[in-house]
Image 1 (cartoon, one colour):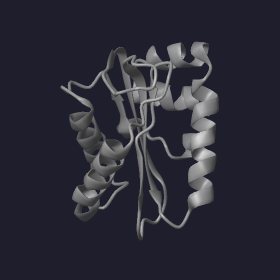
Image 2: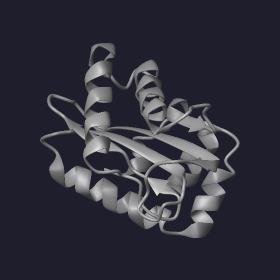
Image 3: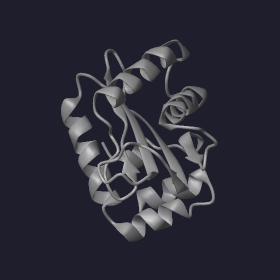
Amino acid sequence: MALADQLHADTILLSPEVDDKWALLEQMVDAVAKAGLLDANRVSEAKAALIARERSVSTGMEDGVAVPHAALENLDKMVAALALFPAGIEFDSMDAKPARVVVMLLVPRHEKLAHVRTLTEIARRLRDAVFRERLLQAATGAAAVALWAE
């Protein structure tokens, strides 16, 4: 399952005003719920799962990338959101640098293979510094989705 198929313009946050990664995770879950991709009665569960996962081990990678993710029982399909921070946000990353591209995934617990494939795709795409910079320059959510789909 390609990430481009899971991204929607309404779930792309461009330089969101948040104080920390915890507030960002909440805002990203709220965005997918508002877009109708996550049932409103699952919002608290999704936030709690992401926060628990992030507290156990940071999902901040290297090169300004973070991929917070959590598996949920009885989720129909994968849900994704993207936050772009040209200035960066502290994410306890492996290289101690701020995250500039944050991809959030909520995945059905029973779809482990799709989860791993999507994480691999994200890592492959975001390893490319030119692609990351182009993504950070997206002026709209639709432009970011189109870029990811290229």
